[in-house]
Length: 82
Image (tube, rainbow, N blue to C red; front, side, top):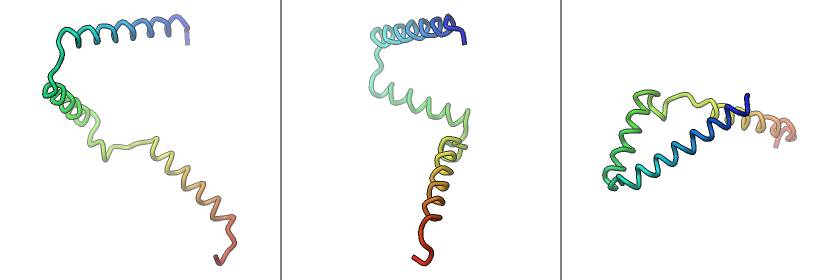
C-alpha cells in the first residue's frame, strides 16, 4: 500500500468529519429527528443485508469454533470416569 494513498485517505476523512461537525452545528437535529434518522438507517441496513439476527456472522462463527476447540482440548486431559 502506498503511504501517499493513506495520507490522502486520512486527509479526506478529517475533512469529511469537519464538514459533518459544521453541518451539525448549523442544522442540529431534534431528539425526535435523530431517533427517526437512526430508525431509517436500521431499516436501510436490514433492506440491504437482511435480518441482523439471522445474517451470517463469520467472526462469531470463528470465535464459537475456537471455544469448542479449547473445550475439546480441556476435556481430553480430564481423567476418564470423573
